[in-house]
Length: 445
Image 1 (tube, rainbow, N blue to C red):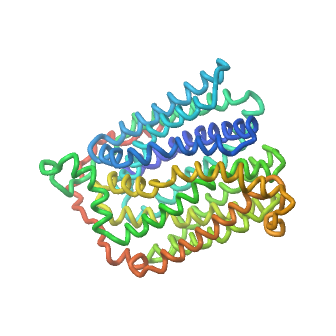
Image 2: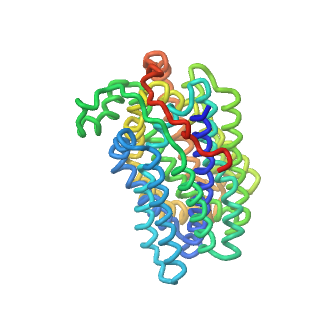
Image 3: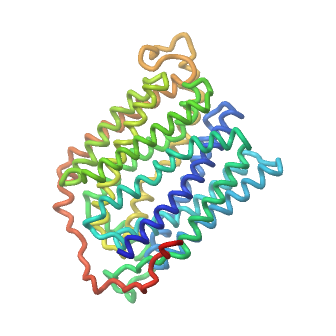
């Protein structure tokens, strides 16, 4: 139980940090779109946020499997806090320029590239298999919970004291996460291979080698590479899309974002309580097919209520897919390889995503949005016309692609049977390094 308590303590404090980070991202997105009226600057921020994960994921996975994961996560949080501090100083001094944001984003995401594999690889050692679906559900809920709280807080603080106030709250949230991480202890994984025979090159390639050995996982990685490419573009479009549909009303936009993240929370709670189908892969693929269909209607929605409903459902369904998928991976990959395997999966699925914002921004600004305001626009019966209609059509096309890709992937027998054909990892409990009695945070900390 002590390890489980450590897991939830880290998770709660990371959720607090995520609230601050999402507030900062939302405030900067609003500021950029209101200052420029273009999607492209937001697209470039997204582009620079993706580059570190693409370049460093396998190195980050190797670091996660070789070094103390607690210190990796604490240092990653500290680096991200430094980035927010520099950004706040630039705004405070009045010398901020948009290119500063690109460089700071690159640095912050460089730090976070090392954090995610370290935490994902620690879950199987802190949470027993019987409770892993529930723990993964709670873990997946931290982002949506932050998204539920962040828009309202960001709108209030941004209106009251501007972007500097939002950044100050972000720094405070980082301090909570860093303190908790330094006080926690995370168990070391049991070894499934000899340290003496392992080389740096072999370790760097171990994650990829594991995927090559288990072909159904590789097929899933290919599928999620395409879905991530589409999803990153949608993330770039979301703030300008909602602002355009709502006539630049940041209050309405914040309410719709809050409702959408509430959908993710509800989806996580439902899948955590239900547990999904057995095999889990059926829940994963059916949820993604439905998510694509719902996204089509989100592109057609032109008023707050239908936008809120469709985005609520769209956020709920991927949550129902992510939770059982994570449980599948944790059951199949040995703990001392999870850092490298999860990093390899992350690197491969993000391989082409940096191209997505570079494509989506100019397409929205120069093709779809101008076309939606022209007299020759033929999609008005579906997505309306005027500001936001072009981006609405882009949402609809993205939904069609996601639904078709998910259906094609689900049609592969090897994917549907992967939980049977790929064996679960097995480890003797005596192989896991024992923890000292001070392994968790103090109860009153």
